[in-house]
Length: 382
Image (cartoon, rainbow, N blue to C red; front, side):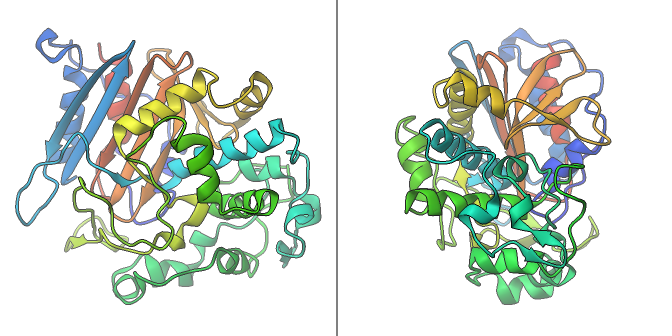
């Protein structure tokens, strides 16, 4: 399966969830590459498929391995770096869910609270009713709330060429993103089905702010980034650049996967807010997901809640928890993590249940490449 990622905030995750997660047969590893030859070859295959460049880091039993393929700058030919920082898109969701679960553990809120309790009157209209939707349903995408990034005007404004270049630096308040979703009908009644919605996590970020009195990004920094010494990770807010070291990010800014390629590195991440605005690098993401699985960020009860999954139609080998996805790979290994896509950047971060083997990587183009092949290569191709 080739994951054709186009310009949507959820493409990497949604497409991965919509197909079987089995990967191709892979060659035996070359010991000169430390057992990661299959991973490196899957990265090279992504570049051959059209991705400008790939950066990846795996960590297993305390030993790290990094590799790059392709280029980080199409104009200069500069290679990608193992230390590259990049926009992680919907991987942000796991950070947001972790903070909400920490607040639950502290007794400051309950996942059974309604959205309306914390954000009165914000979720209403066209059949939406925040008095009938719980925080848990936000985090596991069973709320039925319309996904604002599916709105056709939003797509034209921020994802397609003419709109993007006119609006790439717009500052978009999160309440406006929610209001846009409210102009549409819900996808289904709360709790009756599953549908990925970025609106859910914009709301989750706003709940964190109401419960703490602080910006959700400040809570992520204080509760996760600083304790884990994740110095390459940030919540950029209105900052339009990606800190160095980093590569350029590229997109077709079209539904088609052919045609001109555009540099989309700089943009206002407010169009994603708590659904996908964060920046990180592969080493930091491995540290985060490993610490999460090892119980360093959540008490046992909250971690169990996070890992209680719901079925996802069309993905028999995957389940969605609270901002966290479980997948069973073709070799039977289960991994936990999340994918993320935002303009010119497609990322994946996964770790085994015991947190001992982690992989995080990034494509700096959003129209081609097979992320699942890279995951399969690392965990099953040796």
